[in-house]
Length: 380
Image (tube, rainbow, N blue to C red; front, side, top):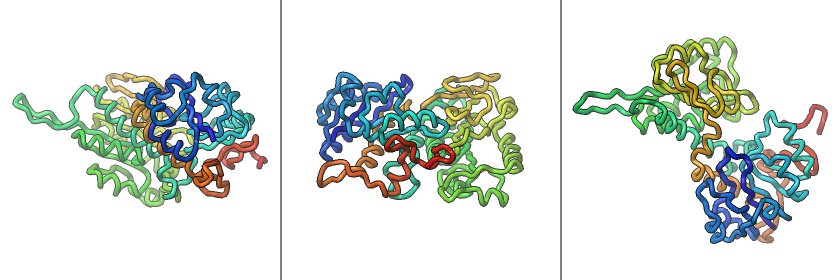
């Protein structure tokens, strides 16, 4: 079997879907691995490192993809890429499926079997494949680094001969993987950290990291979590009470990091124009949900907006700002999933179609969009 690693064509995507380590592991499964020339350059991986691991370096995408049985990607393949994919090839990557049904239909028309890593079931057996967690963890860390870089003051308390520097106050909105890492990082950097989340289980996690939990803890709050561990959308009444509490709290903060996302929905608006107006000049908001519309009303994708001295950071692809580390973790996630699809004795592809992980991630097969979440009404 041949596995192809093409370079990502999106100029804003520096990550790569394989590392020399995973190339070695794929070779051990019996695969021939073709890596497009300079595919790993932006992630700090030179071609000769891939060659040393056993990969063949292809002069271009067409050569890398020729007769490939498996294609490993970071981002969803564009229509211009699909023409070089062999019909029946397996494509594995982050397909960003929600709201992109037209693109999924194009993938189906190319007659490739596509797996979206974001759709893996949240079960213990799939933890090593969980790209959302591996990348969100890095985003939470980088959000604090970016906030510190934009913030015009020091984060930790400092006692000097010239006087005492007070610790910065940081507020993290959303205590999922990204939020918890942001809390831990801000604490390590010396900030006084508070956090909020609508899931009651988050309170104990936040407090275990040394941060103070901020929320309206009524009956609705106590039931605000899905069976899969995601936040439920709250009632308008609860949102109003929580917004009032948060507004008073945000006005006292130096740094606010927002991380709230609900799968398949636009990002909830958590920080209003009025809240921004109440913040101190020189304070910073980092909006990690900007690619889904943003948690802050005033954030703009790819920009740092200055609103009366409050800087609102809307960097895109935050995990990609740590391209080497993000690629290393992502490549391991992909390889762990790929192992499921290979018969290690015969050293060939043998997809277990009835496996719940495989079924959960499968989006297109045999020319059709087969995932129930993305089929047209009346189809399937």
